[in-house]
Length: 128
Image (cartoon, rainbow, N blue to C red; front, side, top):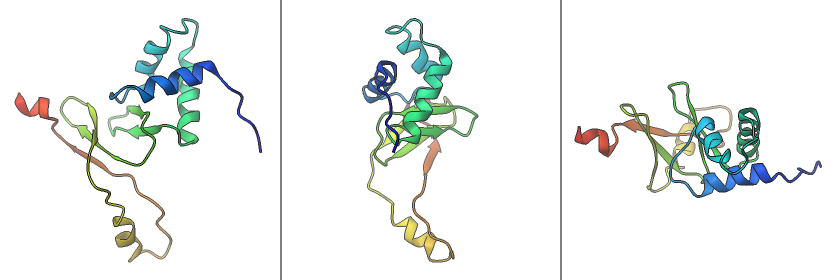
């Protein structure tokens, strides 16, 4: 079993994501982390975000418009994507994990999980 080397930059990225309600892109994370580590490269931010996502410490959100967002809230939860302004918001709702059983009912393999995104217009865009 390999041991992951500690990285102050990776910890700063994880800490930033843990304390923001936003769901930033890698570029947005880079701009924030550069304030602490001015010499950090965008490539380092990308590698660390992907590493953290692969380890299950952050979530990677495919926004269907070609952009990827990151969420420091690693436990399973649902997201809303605004088709108008592109914002990503956490949805506070009861689990719908029972859909795994529904999907398994007519599938010869084994469903182990799901990713569900809700989309439409956010409250701010509905006001326009």
